[in-house]
Image (cartoon, rainbow, N blue to C red; front, top):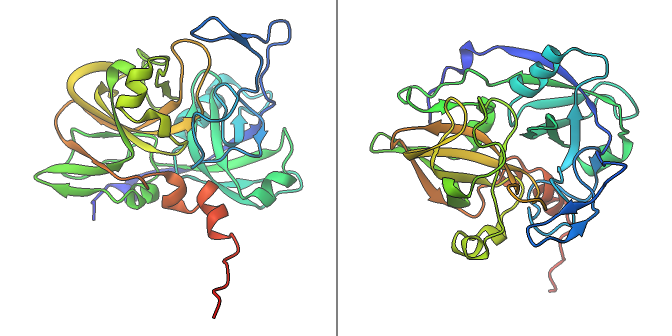
Length: 306
């Protein structure tokens, strides 16, 4: 059982509104790494058929966000937007506060930089009641989280209750973290060099087919917990030999060069303090019984013949 400072953390409300899907009107084309142009759905809105646990590569879209995409409430200032983007953490409890779905609850599954969206998983019945513009309140809880005995591991964007669900253990003064993939920092693209990692994400580049096969990236799912070797995200995002970052896949693959499935950082260290442990089920859907896992758990069971 990891010991943390969770009793000292602040819990605050932050408010977002369901965003309209983004699409450039005059030039909607996206050009891929081979020079072909595409017009496909992208970020924002309510995405009914993509959820955590689904493939990050199979859907025909660009930066597709699972479930509900929250943006800043219209008319609020830039600092309010910072509160939504920075203070929100993966695993936070969410409640709809306007519209037909008022009172329904969900959970934060990631944060997407650039568009500054917070991504929410809701049950399918709730999705059907929601409309663009509905307001959603989040109990922001987790920034400032520390794991006692591991002060050189910087934890961020992580609700303490979700940390418990990640099945992390300790061995030889190191954290052993279950992950679905371990990839090199050299594959990271858009978002690299950002000033900080307390909001948004950065992307895994996939154009090189040999790398995709070598690191099993064809099997990436939204919601997967992954490790990035030699990635130091303590004070921005950079490459540093021996560093390690743990993150979560928050959106689907992309078309344009330098982009790909996005990773919100959950913990990072410049020292050899984190040991990845390969586990296929290391996904937020399985940990919290949401997204695809929720659908499976409620599927009708076949009766055995006597």
